[in-house]
Amino acid sequence: MVSTLCYIILPVVFIIGLLRKCREYSWGKCRNVKNLNGRIFIVTGANSGIGKETAKELAKRKATVIMACRNVQNVRKAIAEIRTEVTSGELIPMELDLASLKSIREFATQVLHEFSEIHVLINNAGVYVPLKEQAFTENGFEVHFGVNHLGHFLLTYLLLERLKASAPSRVVIVTSKLLESGTIDFSNLNGEKGLATEGRMNPSYCNSKLANAYFGFELAKRMKGTGVCVYMVCPGFTYTGLFRHVKRSWLHYIIFSPIALLYLRTANQGAQTVVHCATNFSASIENGKIYRDCKLYEPKMKLDPEVAVKLWDVSAKLTEISDFDTAGLAS
Image 1: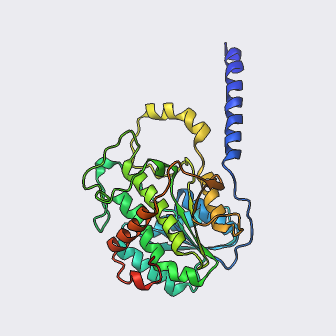
Image 2: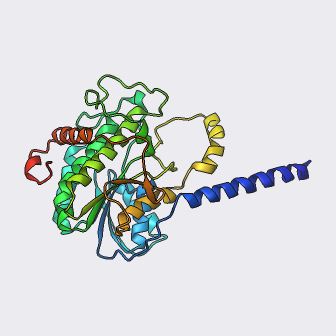
Image 3: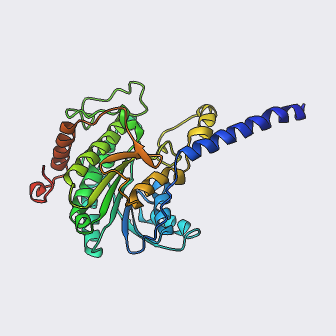
């Protein structure tokens, strides 16, 4: 009986393992191992998941990495863990709460004071909160819109002049394929009218990922000719702490296991396209485009330039950018 089971189970395990390896190959890997000594990177949400793995990959290449996180103790713990594997590069913990406009401004002020150059800003941090929790930021924004989009919008704006002065430089915005399920409803950006799921996992999250794409699209257009390039990245279906607030039963995990074996990436695998876009300065990387699996990705939906402009203007107003028109960023 046991031997019969072995004859059945072992081939199945082998086939699953082979399929997994084939999928891993298709996900792509950053091949650029150029020495980044002297180049300064900022990675938001760098204490765990994709952000932590991105910081580790950059440190391997001898970069200086500002690891911007809400909890400095957590990022110091992450640095200690990275240092068990990587001794090169410089890892700098700094406090940044993207749910607070005040914290974002304080962080930007500190960075601009301490660093004369900023070469790459990686807007990686993100939140995913069940809609029933009705979470909001310190400034009263719906948490997905406020953190995933507005927080990074303001941070990028405050650092843009330094990025321009440090050119060639770049901004990498982590979005998601879920942007294809998102909508930008200017009368309901904060979910004032409620949000129906319509079969989607979380409409607010999907909407914020679409907002990320629109932000990158418009930013690339406004930065044309400045030496600042902009890339949006979908890291793929990755195992991180993003969904830690979502409660699942043991049955969900049993059903999900076969899918995870074939489709779920490790955090390091999810970080590969981020690192690819952050470190590859060849002309083959197209400005203002979305990347997935270390190659160009074309979403099923087309981005509307008019929506991009309007979202930019609304975001500038909501984040209280008073000198918006005098900073060389207006259309």
